[in-house]
Each structure stands twice: as structure tokens, then as C-alpha cells.
Image 1 (cartoon, helix red, strand yellow):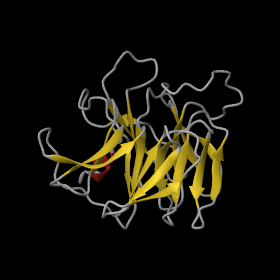
Image 2: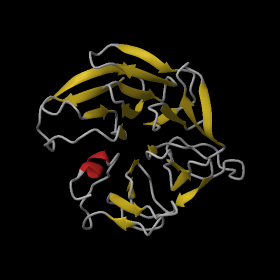
Image 3: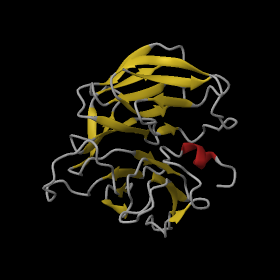
Image 4: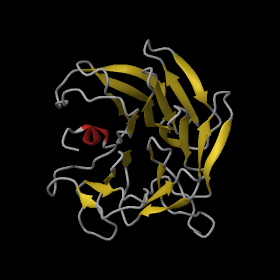
Length: 253
């Protein structure tokens, strides 16, 4: 069973305790970083009893939303620890994010789509037909970034492989255009968007022998397209990074 643990001295930071994975953590832009965590800092079990926890998102009221891929649901956990279903009947939900109006966005890997949960609980499909979408990031103008294996599923004869990791970053513009933003990555594990750049946690470039983690900084050009992706920091600074939210908080960025 999966559960959440929380650092006692940094209550704003929530970590997912899974088998071998720490899921991407998405916070609203006004969130701020606390002091860095050390390996031996005390933690506590904050929530448990889940099947296969993946994406985590925290709204402006401090509610924590967690995606359970095994059950096909998203649960909202209030600051007092009480729980309520946010969405159910999903097909392998993984990545979570919020749009500028605070509406929850969910990447359904098996259904090959990204949906938005409306105030009445209904869902609006924002992206459909892509190959295994996983991680999400948004900008205040409504731009949505999605990590996936392919832009289109129909022309790819390979079956869905739950162990396969995303290789391409897609961009849904505020006008509704879906396009490839950046490609050629190996094992995309998390996205963070800022007004000037997108940060991607990866295992490097596809085809490269390097296996250490690489966080790429991809500039956002004035027309919304991607600039040249550059590794963040010196070589081997990161080891298998997942969900680089703490990097987006860094004062130098």
C-alpha cells in the first residue's frame, strides 16, 4: 500500500512514499520554499492506504490532491487530514496540475488524454489521442505542458507499456493548439513551468550513454516556442531527479 510522508519541520513540502518513485509535486505559484531537507530530518506518515500513488498537487487552500493509478481515482486531503473523492473512474491517472482558475487537471495515461474537473464534477477533455501522457505543468496564461511518449497514439503500433517513460514534451497553447514543445529526452520524470522557462527532470537525452539524472532548463521564447535546452548545474549534480519543484523555487531562477 502507498502512503504520504511529510517533513515535520517543513509542513509545506509533501513527499510521496512509493515503492521506488517519488512523484512530481505541483504547487500553485504563490507557494514558497522552506529550508532544504536533509536525509535524516524527521518525517511523519501523513496519509496512507492508497494503491499506487503518483501525482500530487496542492491548491491555494492547502488541500492536497493525490492520484492513485491502481484505483483510478484522485483524492482530496484537507489540511485537517479528512478525505474526499475529487475524481473516480479514471484510466491510470498520474500527473496533476491546476489551471489559472484553480481547476484540477488530470493526465490519464491509459485513456491517452488530459481532462479538467469542472466545479460541478463533470470533466472536460483538453488533450486526447496522445501516447501515454503523464506529467503536467501550467502557466498563468493557460498554457499547458504535458510529458508523453508520442504526440499521437493512432500511428504508434506499440502497445501501452506502464514501465515506459515519456520522451516528448507537448504544449497546449491558450488558443487550443497542441504541438511538440521539446523532444529527445530519456525518461521524463517531472515538469515545472515558470514564466521564462520550463524545467524538466530527466535521465538525459535519448540515445546518450549517460545514466545520471539531468534537469533541463528550456527557455520560453516570446512566441511560446522552446529555446535550446540546457542542463541545469554541472554534470552529475542530480541523481535520478523526479519532480523538480524545489529547483523552480531557487532564488537564482
